[in-house]
Length: 314
Image 1 (cartoon, rainbow, N blue to C red):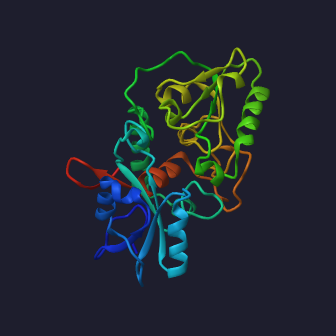
Image 2 (cartoon, one colour):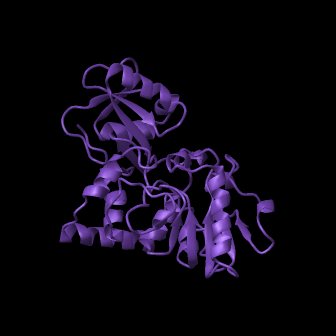
Image 3 (cartoon, rainbow, N blue to C red):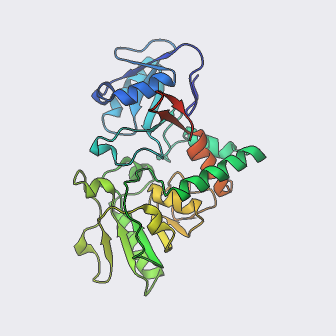
């Protein structure tokens, strides 16, 4: 079997899909092909797999086919280092997650990432590679989406509260809901009296494609609803504390060893780098930032090199 995050070994395996998104997204099909999967339609047979995109409602169709046919289920998602702009703008992905166990943001069941993190044991060379990679990511100010913007120094010693798009599958997967965002904001206020609170809304909300959980009228006069493009590192590195449910910003803050309060069972929670309100009992070991980065950025995703049309590395 092709391991998630790995390349092809042997002839391509058939990957049956039941969503138009796979047929429309040539880049996604190309990356899957390079990773050893032949995207097709129809009814799977012995040795075949069904591919679904994340935990979207349309994915239930593929999940049902996999269950009835006995085919394996492969869950596909954007990687943690995707593109300059969000996918809703049409920007093409530079990395994919191909998970043959679950999906990283659904803590109700294990994922390939969780298994990687539970078993990770870095050699000195691997640890050095992770440390160098993490330093490069931070020095280049890269995140999942990294639009070219001017550095911002307006916010310092603030409390960062991270909003997410309403209905996002990662919120449900983290065991949270709309009420959890209100609980998170209340905790940020109560635990940081006198500090400026900055609420960061999601790029998809800024693009007008989705809605979030906070509006201007939800905040007090001295609190900021940040609805402009800003590099996440400008907010993370200068923050007194970061409050999140399952946003990737919380992951990057944890790597930077900033104080992170996690109100959902995010993929980076439960490994000793965050203060967790919703711990996942399966995660019972403590990781270093290098180990967390190695699992999430080096071992889990598949990277695509568009200049040479081949799989690459971080």
